[in-house]
Image (cartoon, rainbow, N blue to C red; front, side):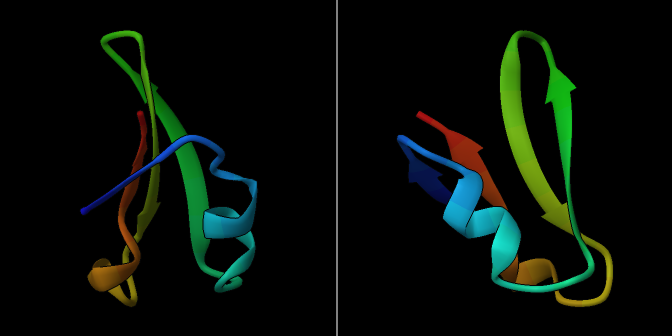
Length: 41
């Protein structure tokens, strides 16, 4: 999982990426390609 300041580019990397808010943190997840996970730092 990458920790990034801005998730906009992380979300645009693949069309299956989606954002989720959990416990006050913002995550980008991808079910088809789990290597594209990211968290807002």
